[in-house]
Length: 319
Image (cartoon, rainbow, N blue to C red; front, side):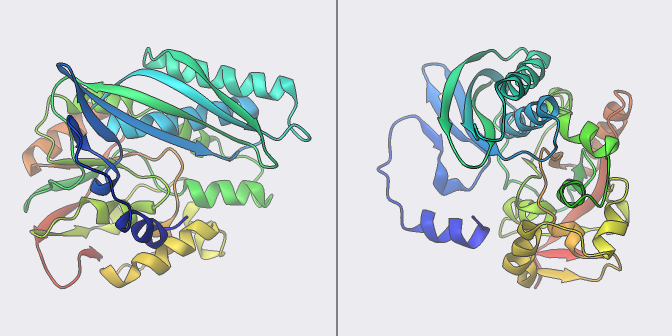
């Protein structure tokens, strides 16, 4: 399902204003948010098909991907439920056990318990989680960026391109991409708690441009220095060869009218549908530099990739 499909569907949905609801599907944010007693809970769900052959690694990636939305709102994950669509003709019991163990090992990194879940038979294998988190400081919206803010990205782009190359047997292995996809955004979120976050989201299925568009508000445009964007090893060469997923093409078709593109890099890189991508953060310029240093000390190579400027003709500018 693409961006335009989602817009058409949600625009026609009606729900009464209910007590405690802070964010719901109408806000186009990463999570729902609701006040329960004295707590602010955030909730999200994400399910993906296999992006690698190894079931244990697949379980890790699907888990990191599902947790990321909660981290992008400044939330601590407090519980998870698994969702397993099992292709029993092609996926063994042992493989499902490996998927689940990969999930549990990732959840343990952020001390989030798996409480249970739901399984069903399906002709296509899928796995994911419904995650509940609690926001203990401030809720980070995705649309609060201000003129002068730095835009930062905490993981390299190109996972959609790399996993497509693996599926097509163009690549035999991709250790850097796998390491990136299994890495949680948990530590980056923890460090961000010490900063005044103006906006935060994570880069997943709508690609960098799609998630930048979610960060927009009427006061700003966003300028991106594409030469500063970190790329996974091999992603640039594969993009030049035309190796990329259909979802990336759909993102480009839906979003390119909002973009002024002056970059010399293949533009599909900026629309590439990511799995378990990095946090995309808007911070004041000085705090942005400090955040980079703090994460580099943790061996997380976040980059400043752009800035927010006064609103112009094009919402997103790539140069």
